[in-house]
Length: 189
Image 1 (tube, rainbow, N blue to C red):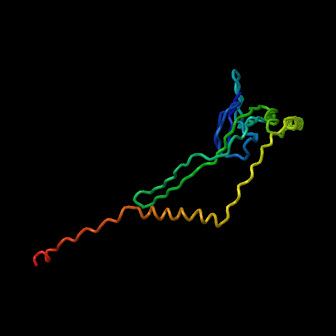
Image 2 (cartoon, rainbow, N blue to C red; image 1 turned 90 degrees about the vertical axis):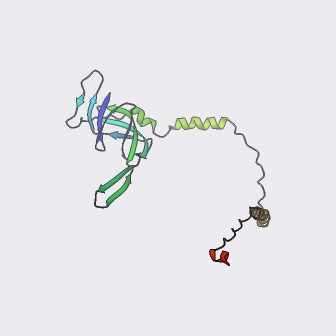
């Protein structure tokens, strides 16, 4: 079963388990959202149901995968011979959805509503029992290293500074200045 939905001023053809990148809609990642503006619903081998303008009671349920932004586009305006140029960038906010179900009646999918709810108490109790049965290994604690006094740190840092000065002194000697050339007046005398 597929549907044509309208969101963000655009139309998308979607089916179950499709991934769709649309303009930003409200919702946290993992949350199931309902897209109610369904323009058409169709099935393989059957005539599609076309809305006027929308199909009544139909809905598409989707899970929010990610909230992000599109690649940057450059907006450049220019008026020739007027020395007018404007450059700006833009990144559109986007939402990535995974279609969970296409519902012609608008009924919320059972699997999607249970998938993102809190775990049942029975499941948490089983996990707690499993943790209680397995003994935890306790690692032997190593004594913490002693903190060095400020005086010790200064002593350790001092030789490093001296070593840095000696390496600077070992650099190549400065170039000698070139001898002056005789001027024409000096050669005549």
